[in-house]
Amino acid sequence: MSRIGKMPISLPKGVAVTISQDNLVTIQGPKGRLQQQLPTDVKIEMAGNEVQVSRVSDSKTQRALHGLSRALINNMVLGVSTGFTRVLDVEGVGYRAALLGKNLVVIVGYSHPVEIVPPAGITFDVDRTGRQITITGIDKAAVGQMAAQIRDLRPPEPYKGKGIRYRGEYVRQKAGKSGKVGGKK
Image (cartoon, rainbow, N blue to C red; front, side, top):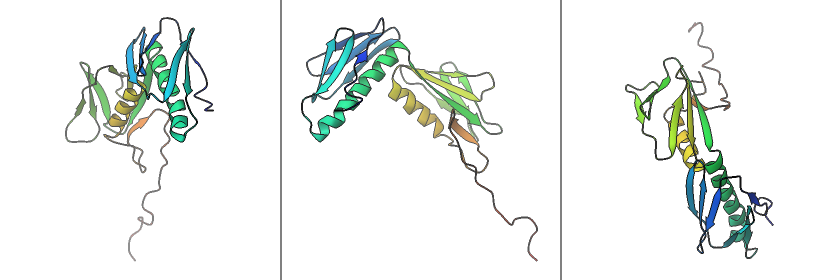
């Protein structure tokens, strides 16, 4: 039995779950509403103030879908109750970010500023120094995908460490060229 799949999901106050016959799960909470179509191979049922996920057989695909379905429902419950946040740090001389209305404008060494329009359900926040970007939303996958897209504009490079990195990400520094001092004799 999946250790993650067999754990029940307790619902916080103000969160309501609706499960249809074809495993369309709709979760409504104080921050918004999320909907996910889950595989029909797993059985999802309400038991009081908890959601329980179980599987019908022990086939390999059912075992894989068991824990996945439980994790997706748990992320939806957490999203509509507390939300998700991803923080990016901008490192480098002249590199910075700013908000233009709801859009994020990033200046990271290109000949032009890059403007990013947030998809529905995602909001940006930039600190006053322009060195920290905060991405918030109720859908964990959408927040992570947007953070990855922003990081891909200028990933941290290993020689000077310039670029956009996740908060807490370690970038291993490489040594530069050796033997450059002096010249030919």
